[in-house]
Image (spheres, rainbow, N blue to C red):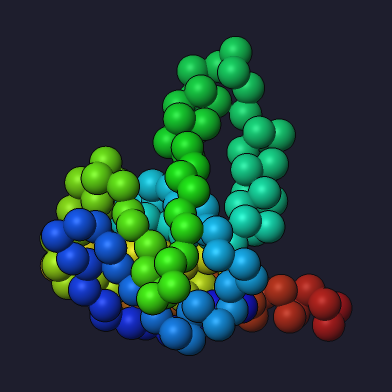
Length: 151
């Protein structure tokens, strides 16, 4: 289980240290990385990636345009953790996420997001007004669910 927010730097060769707290939750020395949503990268342990990959395969078809697009979006890249706890992020993925130097790692139970610090700050600023409304909606759904269970 991953959790927390960390701010490591990426070097000019595309190497970045996976924070020790996150590394401790990883079995083995191989991870899967793919493009995420909102200009971030998603990093998965191999076993978790198998589940995600199966969900993508079972819910899409190569005979439908949206299915092919979804499969292309989630092409995985193998990353090896070196002895120093670093991985090398491929140039195409660095470009996609606009990773330059300062980065943000966000741990979410079964995966990690990697953001450019600048892009993450912009995302937060742009979406802050919507977070309050979303929290209200989630609160209402939870309240309604409890009422249904009690009835």
